[in-house]
Image (cartoon, rainbow, N blue to C red; front, side):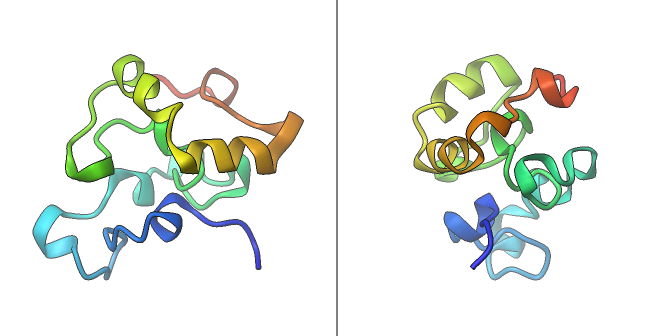
Length: 98
């Protein structure tokens, strides 16, 4: 099995065509094409902590700085960091900004 994107790992169903799109819309991580391929993910799927507006835990997240503090404790963030090892991309290395 290959690497998982956040929407697969968290099973949020907010990807295009997902069951919860009608409730909350498509998650920005699914469509953030600027980060496609980062940490071997699709769009923002493996760098979701650097994408503003995701709804982790059902609550909207804000800009990068307050969001990343919460995200650094997330089980998915830790999984990506472990899987990517020395090649892990956080945000600055990706050229992403809030």
